Image 1: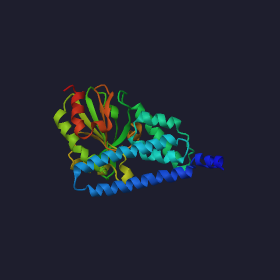
Image 2: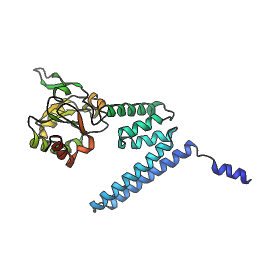
Image 3: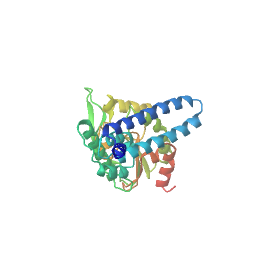
Image 4: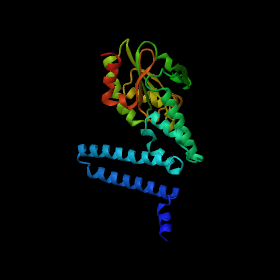
Length: 277
């Protein structure tokens, strides 16, 4: 009887049991997080401190769950929670070990993540720029039809100037919030050594198009180089999973910084450093 009890006690959890435990933890976490943030609504400093701590706790749990379940469906669900917060090389190393059985949407999701990781590594800091061409709309003809002009990244990057390239979309609130920072560095540093290019991507994903990009750019005072009608390809080539996403290129077209490290208050110092100022 004792031996039998020990066997039962040591029996591994089923995938269903692991999934139930994983789901319960995440559901409870989010419920407690929302309640705590409401309670701290009048204390911004405490709310920010709690949010930061909670963010790391969330990542730690889900990354651990991912690494423990590389061969089952729990790993897939954990990957969905953390992939956008993992560095490309870290994610690439995990995906090489990933053996969870996949089908349907899960299979498409993991394939999409792998494609993005490969693109991110190919366009990491220190890599030369990867070119792309878009059918940029310059205006409309007498019949109201768009006038297209093929424009490439190489028309701007690698031409002897440090270039800040901002991937954005007219439907994206965080993109619009970043525009004043971009405008500030453009007005401060624009010269024969520095310029800015905004590339609109995913316009159609929210039912918008090049017209919305042109109108939004005008409203927000974008008076630097622009490419609209970008669709998916530019974002795919650079492994971009969310916007805004900025990439800083040196005068020869090598990537010297990208992503969150050059957003907000960090943008000006990054440009100044690139210019040797």
